[in-house]
Image (cartoon, rainbow, N blue to C red):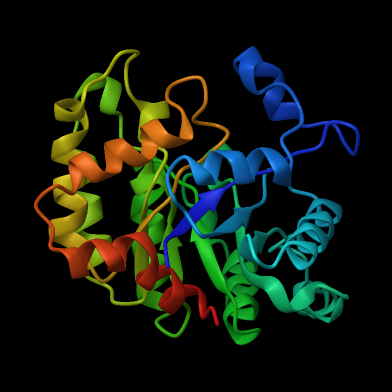
Amino acid sequence: MRIDAHHHLWDLSRRDYDWLHTQNPLIQRTFDVSDLRIAMASAAIDRTILVQTVPEPAETLDLLSIAAANPETIAGVVGWVDLTDAAVSDALAELMASEAGSVLVGIRHVVHNELDARWLMRADVRRGLQAVGEAGLLYEFLVRTRELPAAIDLVESLPDVQFVLDHIGKPPIADGACDEWADCITRLAAHPNVACKLSGLVGEAKPGAITADFQPYADLILESFGTDRVMFGSDWPVCVPYRSYEGVYELAMELLHGLSTSELDAVFGLNAVSVYGLA
């Protein structure tokens, strides 16, 4: 089974997505499950993980309902709760007890938008992340190099919580910079409770970037995490202004050209089954 471990859906008739206002006009429209199925078919992907886009519990409930109505397509949802809320355990329990709560597999927050580079190590955030782990869910990091040191400290302090690094930590591919990011990635990957998504690369590169521009970053991820902790993610439809769904899939295949069939099966599906606890 081939699984896309990271994509989004949004419905402009349901809510305002502030972050979309600054994005390419190509993605300033509603993307629904019918659009997703067409995109998936272009790369022979069987199922997906649907990821939150705004810090609103209501969006998470909508995503859970979409997943529950389309189990043949969407295998799980990574949602959002306010980690700093003293009642975060109750919020998680409410989501999981909702009609479609069984498909909730994780929680995410856009950490790189926080002013504090050490936000992840705040006492209230750390308490919230403990609650996420205790609820049997994983936590996904959306960070850049600036926030990676805090992420390293966090995973070391919470060894019983499963973490996933989105978009390989959003390295500055357009600048060709690598050293600081690479050092952080190596240190983060030393902790076995962290997996990584090979996703979001095209949005960090210059227009017209070729495979060779991405190769050093993909190579370091494979070297650091190994093929048993890396998952393919399309980051569709955010990727659309840069490459199509099929184009992102083909890029990933090119970057992983040296892997065996069994290793490719792991990156493109089996690792997601294990990390997310999918049936």
